[in-house]
Image (tube, rainbow, N blue to C red):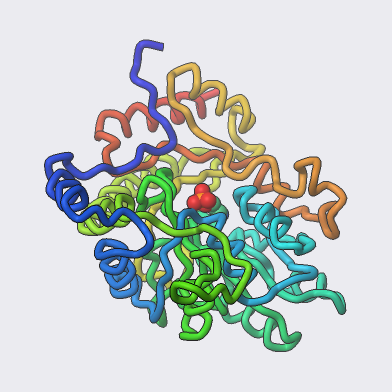
Length: 371
Ligand SMILES: *Cc1c(COP(=O)(O)O)cnc(C)c1O
């Protein structure tokens, strides 16, 4: 175990010298939170970069999910995916909603619109879909289901920062999309998040809710919460947005090396790009260890760990397999999601991963493939 550990991700950090002048400005201004120049600058810069009409910055992605549900007045059953990070479903519980699980499509790995439609009851109020690994949902299919049944459609786009489609920005789909800027995401502000939406009144409502419901100095119009992003994080975001294209390009090159090395290994299924995506963000490198591989998924995971390569099983277990969700509607019949959760392994992928380190991962997986 002498080799340096390779984690599944490492947060990108611009050179410290570049952050220093921004810190000096903050110290001079004493404007630390409750909006401020960096906050407003980052909201505008993200709207431009993501090609979306409106962005509301928030303290993290989980609060973004909760505020989107609150601002859209969603309470009742919400159909969602079991194949995601647990925050997706937790946010529903914190918002007085009942999660109903529907199965995913084996190609996109996202909610299957037909399964969603089959799970609708008279109590259904919304669909909460996830663009897992930044792979777009069938947004047209989900939109059609939502319209047919009068449902809200919210996207957890925590993985989808900067993904571009030939038609429209992926972030613009649905009533609202939420982003996470957690340190493990492609674009991060240490912690942070945002809601993207089209409707001006909806943004106004979100902006009210993120600051305790205050309208001006003396009026409180709603039971808001503290979900604000501070100036330190916003300043960091303004700086690091400048290097995001380089980060994504570096990840694309590593992805191409992995793809070329693993394409011919028996029993490994790689993910093909989905049609319509003109730019992926390469947030993750999942591969699926199928029965034809020399080792089981967990044996491969252990083998890599022995060599200090810390791959992660995103997303295993399924959210619907955690104790508090086992009895939720739909949790007992999710065959596609289960197959994916049982075979997935995400390999290290981040811009600063060196050529030799990529070779280390490739050699380790290739060696494991030989029985
Ligand atoms: C990271 C993540 C979240 C939570 O975001 P935080 O900023 O960590 O609160 C929600 N959903 C998905 C799919 C995520 O990956």
